[in-house]
Amino acid sequence: MRKTYLEVSREAFLHNIREIKGIVRNAEIMPVIKANAYGTYLNKDLELISQFDMVAVAIVDEAIQLRKLGYKKDIFVLNQPYQEEIEDIIKNNIIVGVSSISFLDKVNEFNDKIRVHVEIETGMGRTGVSLNELDNFIDKLNNSNVLVEGVYTHLSSADIDNNFTYKQINLFNEGVDKLKNNFSSIKYIHCAASNGILNFDLGICNLVRPGLIMYGYPSCKNIMDKIKLEPVLKFKSSISFIKEVKEGDSISYCRSFVANKKMRVATIGCGYADGVNRLLSNKGYVSLNGKRCKILGNICMDSFMIDVSNVECNVGDCVYIFDNDLVTVDEVASICETISYEIISTISDRVPRIFVD
Image (cartoon, rainbow, N blue to C red; front, side, top):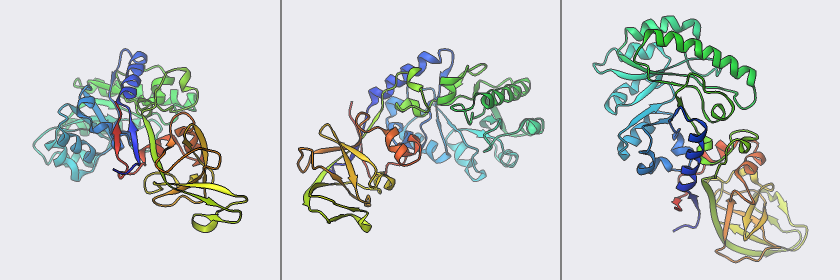
């Protein structure tokens, strides 16, 4: 087997769930397992996800895959689906978020009821029904072939802007009151993802949607003061080749690194097609035998090079692109000028996921 893979810890995931439960004692957890559970593939562990009565995904296709896997409990699709997906929604007994009148009109062409959660627009600026449109939307719901089981919104800035978040929460509460006055079938009220869970009072909500923190990574600054997380992933590869280079020799495409002295250089058998972000070229580090080694030259599609001049190592030795110790996901994200969400969720499908416990 190729010696590039993700180590995935189920025990770390379960630890994080226990930590979240300790914070949201009066709310049910609906884990967000979209994008292959943020790249961890824990969504493919039927025994693990069956511990939850409802899970959340982003798109209908992800829900269908869970049904094919054998997950029999409730699945909630966070995003407004397309009209063309209604038949699949009915066939697979999927709950969906709705905020589109044209979608409701299309539902009436089918005999079976669709279970829905109504999304309220409170400031995310993505999807959702604004409060000034809610009365009209409620009329449509009452005349549509749906069963309203929930109401939700998304807090856009719960990590950086308390005032705006409180404004969103107040708008949400107003929308919830209107919907509850019209639909006794509402069971779930939710607005809090990871940052909302950790930074705000849940108020009227009885359901939470943890994402990144379930996988052990801080969703904003100072999170570790509030919850003890254990990272789920380690991105592992190995040395495929070692060479000596002399002063003036260049490394990789475009000669972006030229040695200014004699060096020992190792080639690692994975690249940007695997999820090693090309922005790490000449900037990033890896962990090798307890030491940090600098990435040299441009990262290639299937390999990259590192400086091992001061490290005892051999072909076949393990290299961590991130090990949560010497090299963290947050460091990788910072170098790439992005967020940890992107780093872990874009690791390629050609990288096997190995469950280590």
